[in-house]
Length: 131
Image (cartoon, one colour):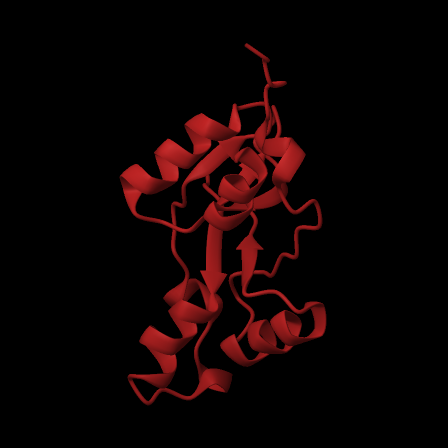
């Protein structure tokens, strides 16, 4: 029986983390998503006692467009998900898949040992990297 090397979250995560301040407007967030061709942005912790957030196109669709709100008048902090599921970069990918499935989410912020965002892991990337 051939053993496969252990796949870690850091091996399949997207290393480039695009962040936005919670006080930015949704219009600014969407412009940043377009510029970097991503569907979510991490919202960093404000201090050591805070938790990271995540804002994605689904949040914009559900909480801004569907509710007929003006994107230039809504702040990111009003629609972002917080706290979000975070994954340590050294976690095995198979356990990360289980965690995302258990909580019914498609992505998580990957953090290093001091809990700073270092990447985004999507269920898609984890599954395709694992199989």
